[in-house]
Amino acid sequence: MKILRRLRGAALALLLAGCHPALLTTQRPSEEFSLYLDRGQTDARWDGSVGKGFGLFAAGGLPAASRQFEKAVSAGCDDGLVLFHLAACSYVAGGNARAGELLRAAIPALDARYAGTTYPARARNLRAIALMDEGRTAEAEGALKEALRKAPPLAETHSNLGKLYAAQNRQGEAFLEFEQALQLDPNDATARLNLGFLYASEGRHDEALAEFDRILRLYADDHRAHYAKGRTFIQMGFTDEAIGEFQEAVRLRGDFFDGHLALGQACAAAQRWADAETALLRAIRLQPRNPKGQYALGRMYAQKGDGARAIKALRKAVRTDPLFFEGHLALGVAYAEGNDHEAALLEFTKAVELDKKSAVAYRHRGRALFQLNRFGDALKDLGRSLDLENDNPVTLLFIGRSHWKLKDYERAREALKRATAADPGNAHAHLALAEIAEEQGDHEEAIAEYARVTELVPDAADIQYKLGKLYDKAGRKDEAFKALQKAGPYLERIGTTR
Image 1 (cartoon, rainbow, N blue to C red):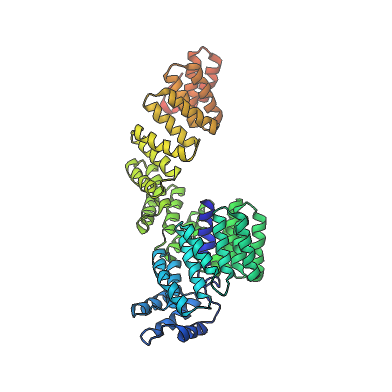
Image 2 (cartoon, rainbow, N blue to C red):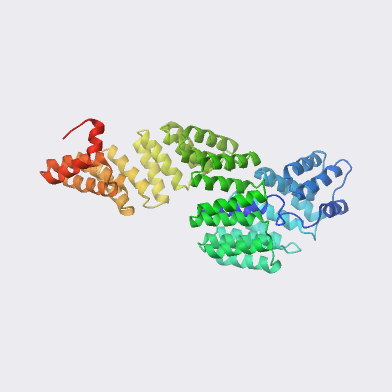
């Protein structure tokens, strides 16, 4: 699923950004309008709006083009070419549902009036991309294979089919599709872009960068290639280099939503908060109906430690799209960090309802239930999370803590030991084991576990204090003295002396 999200968030959205040739006709607007006049459903009531719409669309003015096409449709136009272009505008603006509705009407109309042109296949490509966004991969594959049966063949179709296969980890088939796309058009920047994304998804970053640089040698002003280089640099851990590429991408294309979004996220990673906020607010202004902008802004505020503004932005994200899984999850985390566990529980419940196979959603809801002292309910969710993601150390930690709260010490220890086996550096699990052992009077076990915690967190003065007291009880005076010396900051804080 990570690969699918990456491809959707980058290659797929980029395919439709502005007026890139991968989506748009290669004809000049006048020729396109001539095609409409020759084959389309013409009428004096809307021909003027249609002509203006084609011109604005080709010039990259999609919002204005959309308004002209909407005027035509409102006047009664149901021409397939017009509906297709309006669907493209809607998709780019984040209106997937509207785009899908328009494409359902556009495709048969294009088949009827525009057979032999590229438009029947292009419309199916756009429909497939929208279906992929919704996770409906089988339907998307069907739409693309149907597009392949339409003449003339399009490199774009092979490229999109390759992306779909890559998202399903069908890497061999993906490479074949990208190669076929490049055979049809060796200079197809989109196919080469997708090939680079596939290399990057496999960790072959140098090969990915080589493909993106090849695009830039062909098309120096291709903002998508700079964006793709930025994403690859992020994967490589080169944040400053990534910021530079994202800045170049948005310089070349000021209305590039994904570019501003990625720039904001990269600046946040570099703790350049003002730059991050500026970039993300620009992204939001470009696509106010796209929840990803407010989501990224909320995540940035959370990183900065501004919980109130994080919650405000994330609430806007889920209001914009109530089915936005990641938004509900992040909003729940923000509430939990502010100790509003009831509100967190509501958001995590919405996330679970949206994806009942998400181990993360069940784990977070289980943690919220734990914080609300609903330990039995917490165990149900945590158990479900563990079924979906075996031996996750955080899940095991809270399973252990829940059993401990219910005085089931045997099961608590079993879960906590599994947590430390899965993650030997899990200081919280070792601490819980130490406290259980101390509670049950097993001082040697408690000493061993507290000592392990101090190895993992040497400056934990409160743990040094507990360890020192246990050493003292066990008659291990020298070790007690050393531990209590290290506990000095804790003793000063609580006003206690040895």
